[in-house]
Picture (tube, helix red, strand yellow):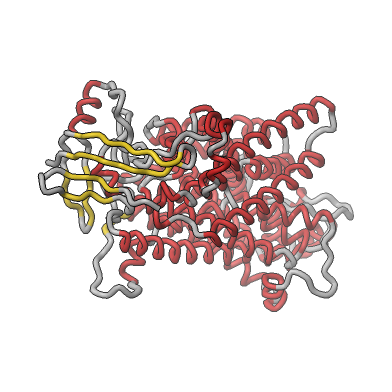
Length: 618
């Protein structure tokens, strides 16, 4: 048991230097866990839980919550141990210990929305947009790296950091925006799963029936985490393997020209390549589908599942390196799977008309789903369902069923990771913990109602249009993940020596501005094409656009101050309405936990036997 006397000096980007001195004479239990020290719930907080009423000064920590019912979403009691190695060089044993969070994160790059975007990219532009897919994946890796570093260095995920660094109203707006992104993604996953069941059952299960089934199967899969974290990660790896096998099978049987595929990946412009408005819009759609806002919140939380002694900068640096390697491997695998899908439909459906596809089915005597293709000379408009029917017509029924299995795996895996992202967001932004089944029920109920109505009263074409609108909605939410991520990882008060360097700041900011601009263009084009042209709709969209840009400006100013713009931070308006002084203890009341949370912070024993917390000046 330890008594603490704390003396702090910190630099606030809003109020300059400030000094705090206070004494903490509370008892904390400290127990070893592997090569790290894990601080358990303080006695004071246990009494709060018993009384079901937190005290005024109590704050959530890495292992505790103001909520009396701590559900330990991120497996605080089951952290994976990182093996010690004699050498400081690269170790495959360590890489294996860190393997898991990156692959769970990569699921978002393989959800049904992404698969449909890949399919449409091949139909519209053949192989010429593969370089856009590669670039978007690299952009995603850059942002995922920052997200993971935030979780590793601070021990707090992105939503928890937002809770500590933003004022109440902006924080609630951020939460709502991220929930919209999660629900939109969930709707895409419901659509994909329902289409997969429709194909696998030879139309015996209607689309609306498949929508209802997704409620039950999601609960079933979520029980898997009762068997342990590593088994859950292994199951996700199995689902990714199923997608790699199924979509890889389609790639092999379709046999696209390999030279054309490789050239499309690395050469943006070559002789005979044209970029009309439709191709450009599809390129923008790829970026919007690949980089998912809620995925940054998810990844920053998943990295907390490894036992890292954050008091030792060398171990934090090690963890950052291995997580980056793992994320790179995971996103490389997801990129290859996406390429499989693009290439299959680029080879088979580029510049094809409805008549062309109908004749392919007729020649091969494949009648299942033939009525889907209108007998006219309009350009073929592909979606997940029509893509499966085309594969059946071209390569036999086995190809269609294998395609459906891949879509089913994509839908189920994305649903599960989306549930985790939603729970992390709710716990972080609101400090509210729900049992996972309640979280699933909340998200899935909101997602199912509009999807069920469209599936029941409309047809497959309406579901495809709905998917495009959902991509546009999620694109709009991207600034609400990227700007906080860059802000927090650039702050010396939060990240210490692990803050972003000048080049990292420039690259991350430039990429974010580029992606946000691209996504806004995509949304404008989608609204013009898919929504009715009525003055009331345009008036509502205009008001929303103004509010949207104001909030983005708020986040941008906060980000600039976090990056070190002290003159801006000292302005009275910014100090009063945008920024509050950065809390160097990150809102953590227990110095022992904070020492473990922030490697820039250390606890030194004085000659008197008391302990002093030291925050180095930067």
